[in-house]
Length: 120
Image 1 (spheres, rainbow, N blue to C red):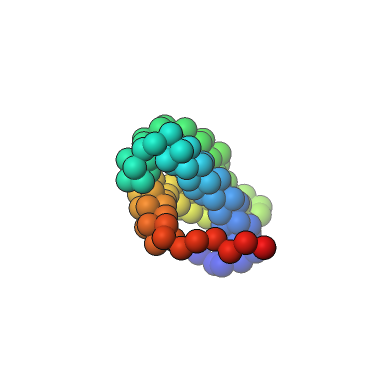
Image 2 (cartoon, rainbow, N blue to C red):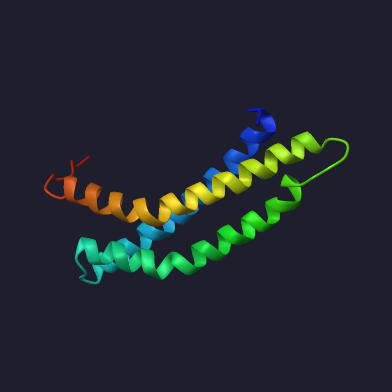
């Protein structure tokens, strides 16, 4: 598979979707921490709460990329590049986001928990 402009557009699209998913998990985790949950429990609760919407969005995104990935005819190479980039990137980003966003949320919060913020 060539790393051409079509493939890069597909990866950019995938980055947008995966960052949206990560932002939603972090927002839900922050809200759970504000409600009094521990960091670990808040991260797990956020991941559990957002799992079904993330999976549904990702499956819809993948289903939308399927016709592109199996395209034939004139100009099919560009559509195949976009389709495979979307499908592969979405699968990878979804699996990584479900497991690693809550983990990094807890790690980053613990790392910066004791450091006071600078006043500007």
